[in-house]
Image (cartoon, rainbow, N blue to C red; front, side, top):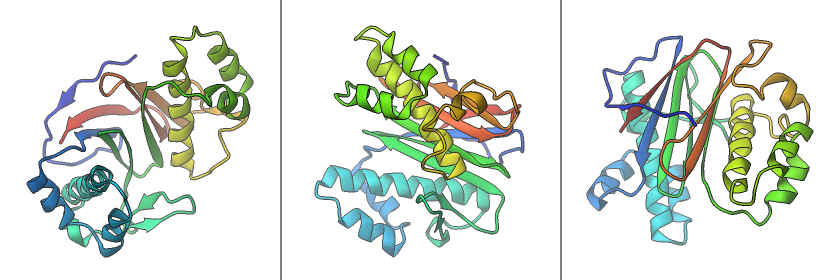
Length: 229
Protein backbone atom coordinates (compact mmCIF):
# COMPACT_ATOMS: atom_id res chain seq x y z
CA UNK A 1 0.00 0.00 0.00
CA UNK A 2 1.25 3.45 -0.90
CA UNK A 3 2.91 5.47 1.87
CA UNK A 4 1.94 9.14 2.02
CA UNK A 5 4.10 12.12 2.89
CA UNK A 6 1.66 14.49 4.63
CA UNK A 7 2.72 18.15 4.46
CA UNK A 8 1.66 21.39 6.08
CA UNK A 9 -0.37 23.64 3.76
CA UNK A 10 1.35 26.17 1.48
CA UNK A 11 -0.29 29.14 -0.18
CA UNK A 12 -3.13 27.28 -1.83
CA UNK A 13 -3.08 26.86 -5.58
CA UNK A 14 -3.52 23.58 -7.41
CA UNK A 15 -1.64 23.36 -10.71
CA UNK A 16 -3.45 21.65 -13.55
CA UNK A 17 -1.31 18.51 -13.19
CA UNK A 18 -1.79 18.29 -9.40
CA UNK A 19 -4.35 16.70 -7.11
CA UNK A 20 -4.27 17.93 -3.52
CA UNK A 21 -5.52 15.54 -0.87
CA UNK A 22 -6.22 16.93 2.59
CA UNK A 23 -6.47 14.84 5.74
CA UNK A 24 -8.11 15.87 9.01
CA UNK A 25 -9.50 14.37 12.16
CA UNK A 26 -13.17 15.10 12.79
CA UNK A 27 -12.85 14.98 16.57
CA UNK A 28 -11.84 18.55 17.38
CA UNK A 29 -12.12 20.61 20.59
CA UNK A 30 -15.54 22.15 21.15
CA UNK A 31 -14.33 25.70 20.56
CA UNK A 32 -13.06 24.75 17.09
CA UNK A 33 -16.31 22.95 16.31
CA UNK A 34 -18.24 26.10 17.23
CA UNK A 35 -16.05 28.22 14.94
CA UNK A 36 -16.57 25.84 12.02
CA UNK A 37 -20.32 25.71 12.72
CA UNK A 38 -20.50 29.44 12.06
CA UNK A 39 -19.38 28.88 8.46
CA UNK A 40 -22.25 26.50 7.61
CA UNK A 41 -25.28 27.41 5.55
CA UNK A 42 -28.80 27.15 6.93
CA UNK A 43 -29.46 23.86 5.16
CA UNK A 44 -26.18 22.38 6.49
CA UNK A 45 -27.17 23.37 10.03
CA UNK A 46 -30.53 21.69 9.50
CA UNK A 47 -28.80 18.53 8.29
CA UNK A 48 -26.52 18.57 11.33
CA UNK A 49 -29.51 18.97 13.67
CA UNK A 50 -31.08 15.77 12.31
CA UNK A 51 -28.36 13.56 13.79
CA UNK A 52 -29.48 11.77 16.92
CA UNK A 53 -26.05 11.45 18.55
CA UNK A 54 -24.00 14.52 19.44
CA UNK A 55 -20.77 12.94 18.15
CA UNK A 56 -22.31 12.39 14.70
CA UNK A 57 -23.61 15.96 14.67
CA UNK A 58 -20.20 17.36 15.55
CA UNK A 59 -18.38 15.23 12.99
CA UNK A 60 -20.75 16.36 10.24
CA UNK A 61 -20.28 19.97 11.30
CA UNK A 62 -16.49 19.64 11.25
CA UNK A 63 -16.48 17.82 7.89
CA UNK A 64 -18.55 20.52 6.20
CA UNK A 65 -16.82 23.39 7.96
CA UNK A 66 -13.40 22.12 6.94
CA UNK A 67 -14.57 21.69 3.34
CA UNK A 68 -15.65 25.33 3.32
CA UNK A 69 -12.42 26.47 4.97
CA UNK A 70 -10.21 24.59 2.52
CA UNK A 71 -12.14 25.73 -0.55
CA UNK A 72 -12.20 29.33 0.62
CA UNK A 73 -8.40 29.38 0.55
CA UNK A 74 -8.32 28.17 -3.05
CA UNK A 75 -11.12 30.41 -4.28
CA UNK A 76 -10.50 33.54 -2.24
CA UNK A 77 -14.13 33.51 -1.05
CA UNK A 78 -15.09 33.65 2.65
CA UNK A 79 -16.12 30.19 3.84
CA UNK A 80 -19.69 31.20 4.83
CA UNK A 81 -20.25 32.74 1.37
CA UNK A 82 -19.63 29.56 -0.62
CA UNK A 83 -22.76 28.26 -2.34
CA UNK A 84 -22.89 24.59 -3.25
CA UNK A 85 -24.91 22.95 -5.99
CA UNK A 86 -25.60 19.23 -5.94
CA UNK A 87 -25.65 16.72 -8.79
CA UNK A 88 -28.14 13.93 -9.29
CA UNK A 89 -26.31 11.66 -6.83
CA UNK A 90 -25.65 14.43 -4.31
CA UNK A 91 -22.12 15.33 -5.43
CA UNK A 92 -21.39 18.93 -4.36
CA UNK A 93 -19.93 21.50 -6.73
CA UNK A 94 -19.42 25.24 -7.00
CA UNK A 95 -20.43 26.69 -10.33
CA UNK A 96 -18.41 29.33 -12.24
CA UNK A 97 -15.08 27.98 -11.01
CA UNK A 98 -12.59 25.49 -12.42
CA UNK A 99 -11.78 24.12 -8.96
CA UNK A 100 -13.11 20.57 -8.67
CA UNK A 101 -13.38 18.81 -5.33
CA UNK A 102 -14.76 15.82 -3.50
CA UNK A 103 -14.79 14.62 0.09
CA UNK A 104 -15.24 11.45 2.09
CA UNK A 105 -15.23 10.64 5.78
CA UNK A 106 -15.33 7.51 7.89
CA UNK A 107 -15.27 7.21 11.68
CA UNK A 108 -13.20 10.21 12.86
CA UNK A 109 -11.19 10.81 9.67
CA UNK A 110 -11.97 12.99 6.63
CA UNK A 111 -10.29 13.36 3.24
CA UNK A 112 -10.75 16.16 0.71
CA UNK A 113 -9.52 15.99 -2.91
CA UNK A 114 -8.95 19.20 -4.90
CA UNK A 115 -7.90 19.74 -8.51
CA UNK A 116 -8.70 21.96 -11.51
CA UNK A 117 -10.72 21.35 -14.66
CA UNK A 118 -11.09 17.57 -14.24
CA UNK A 119 -13.74 15.40 -12.61
CA UNK A 120 -12.57 13.54 -9.55
CA UNK A 121 -13.89 11.49 -6.66
CA UNK A 122 -12.46 10.18 -3.40
CA UNK A 123 -13.64 7.45 -1.06
CA UNK A 124 -12.43 6.59 2.44
CA UNK A 125 -13.31 3.54 4.53
CA UNK A 126 -12.39 2.24 7.98
CA UNK A 127 -11.34 -1.38 7.51
CA UNK A 128 -13.63 -3.70 9.44
CA UNK A 129 -15.31 -7.10 9.02
CA UNK A 130 -18.48 -6.97 6.94
CA UNK A 131 -21.05 -9.74 7.25
CA UNK A 132 -22.48 -8.76 3.87
CA UNK A 133 -19.10 -8.63 2.11
CA UNK A 134 -19.60 -11.90 0.19
CA UNK A 135 -23.05 -10.89 -1.07
CA UNK A 136 -21.88 -7.40 -2.06
CA UNK A 137 -18.85 -8.81 -3.86
CA UNK A 138 -21.03 -11.24 -5.80
CA UNK A 139 -23.45 -8.47 -6.76
CA UNK A 140 -21.17 -5.49 -7.43
CA UNK A 141 -17.64 -6.73 -8.07
CA UNK A 142 -16.60 -7.73 -11.57
CA UNK A 143 -15.73 -11.36 -12.20
CA UNK A 144 -12.02 -10.56 -11.97
CA UNK A 145 -12.42 -8.55 -8.75
CA UNK A 146 -14.62 -11.20 -7.18
CA UNK A 147 -12.15 -13.96 -8.06
CA UNK A 148 -9.33 -11.98 -6.42
CA UNK A 149 -11.47 -11.30 -3.35
CA UNK A 150 -12.61 -14.92 -2.95
CA UNK A 151 -9.00 -16.14 -3.13
CA UNK A 152 -8.04 -14.12 -0.03
CA UNK A 153 -7.71 -15.69 3.40
CA UNK A 154 -10.36 -14.75 5.99
CA UNK A 155 -7.94 -12.35 7.70
CA UNK A 156 -7.16 -10.65 4.38
CA UNK A 157 -10.75 -10.23 3.23
CA UNK A 158 -11.73 -7.07 5.18
CA UNK A 159 -8.85 -5.04 3.67
CA UNK A 160 -9.31 -6.71 0.28
CA UNK A 161 -13.01 -5.93 0.21
CA UNK A 162 -12.54 -2.23 0.98
CA UNK A 163 -9.67 -1.95 -1.49
CA UNK A 164 -12.06 -2.84 -4.32
CA UNK A 165 -14.96 -0.96 -2.77
CA UNK A 166 -13.15 2.38 -2.42
CA UNK A 167 -11.93 2.17 -6.02
CA UNK A 168 -15.47 1.71 -7.29
CA UNK A 169 -16.92 4.39 -5.03
CA UNK A 170 -14.25 6.95 -5.97
CA UNK A 171 -14.89 6.32 -9.66
CA UNK A 172 -18.68 6.50 -9.22
CA UNK A 173 -18.35 9.80 -7.40
CA UNK A 174 -16.08 11.14 -10.14
CA UNK A 175 -18.47 10.29 -12.97
CA UNK A 176 -21.67 10.93 -10.99
CA UNK A 177 -23.16 7.58 -12.00
CA UNK A 178 -24.61 5.16 -9.47
CA UNK A 179 -24.27 2.07 -11.69
CA UNK A 180 -21.21 2.55 -13.89
CA UNK A 181 -18.82 0.44 -11.81
CA UNK A 182 -21.07 -2.53 -11.01
CA UNK A 183 -20.16 -4.59 -14.08
CA UNK A 184 -17.20 -6.04 -15.97
CA UNK A 185 -16.76 -2.83 -18.01
CA UNK A 186 -15.08 -1.34 -14.93
CA UNK A 187 -12.16 -3.76 -15.41
CA UNK A 188 -11.69 -2.71 -19.01
CA UNK A 189 -11.58 1.03 -18.35
CA UNK A 190 -10.52 1.98 -14.83
CA UNK A 191 -9.53 -1.05 -12.75
CA UNK A 192 -5.78 -0.49 -13.17
CA UNK A 193 -3.76 2.29 -11.54
CA UNK A 194 -3.78 4.09 -14.89
CA UNK A 195 -6.45 3.18 -17.42
CA UNK A 196 -5.35 1.94 -20.82
CA UNK A 197 -7.49 4.51 -22.63
CA UNK A 198 -5.93 7.41 -20.65
CA UNK A 199 -9.34 8.49 -19.39
CA UNK A 200 -9.02 7.71 -15.68
CA UNK A 201 -6.34 7.60 -13.02
CA UNK A 202 -6.93 5.68 -9.78
CA UNK A 203 -4.63 5.63 -6.77
CA UNK A 204 -5.27 3.71 -3.56
CA UNK A 205 -3.47 4.63 -0.36
CA UNK A 206 -3.57 4.20 3.43
CA UNK A 207 -4.23 7.63 5.01
CA UNK A 208 -4.02 6.23 8.56
CA UNK A 209 -3.77 2.84 10.28
CA UNK A 210 -6.81 0.65 9.57
CA UNK A 211 -8.08 2.99 6.84
CA UNK A 212 -7.97 2.70 3.07
CA UNK A 213 -8.82 5.31 0.45
CA UNK A 214 -8.85 5.73 -3.32
CA UNK A 215 -8.83 8.86 -5.44
CA UNK A 216 -10.12 8.71 -9.03
CA UNK A 217 -9.25 11.54 -11.44
CA UNK A 218 -10.14 12.08 -15.08
CA UNK A 219 -7.04 11.80 -17.29
CA UNK A 220 -3.50 10.69 -16.44
CA UNK A 221 -0.11 12.05 -15.46
CA UNK A 222 -1.22 13.44 -12.10
CA UNK A 223 1.02 14.49 -9.22
CA UNK A 224 -0.64 13.73 -5.88
CA UNK A 225 0.25 16.02 -2.98
CA UNK A 226 -0.90 15.25 0.56
CA UNK A 227 -1.70 17.95 3.15
CA UNK A 228 -2.73 18.07 6.80
CA UNK A 229 -5.28 20.60 8.08
